Image (cartoon, rainbow, N blue to C red):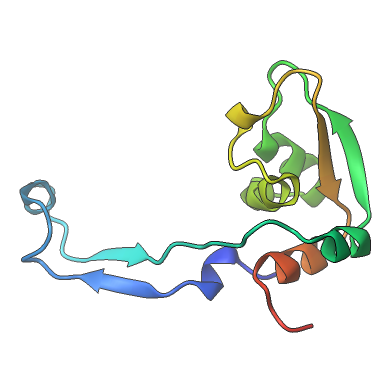
Length: 115
């Protein structure tokens, strides 16, 4: 199963540029990932993915839906991408939330890979 961080560049930040707090915590290396900008899914992309529909309720979280449908909380970001809402706070009680059925295809589309 692909990981969303597989498509991001990893930079090692030099000791000179780091804050003093890292030195106090005995941190030798700090790795920073580039920003992932998957963009909004197009109409064609949405058409190729079938989805489950849930109604957002009090206490619902995207990671809970990811666990329920994908067996892992780490795929919450796929649901966020598919709904074009980056956090749970962007949903209101009663909003429809769509969960892509084909996780591998959703990850491929979100990362703009060639199929």
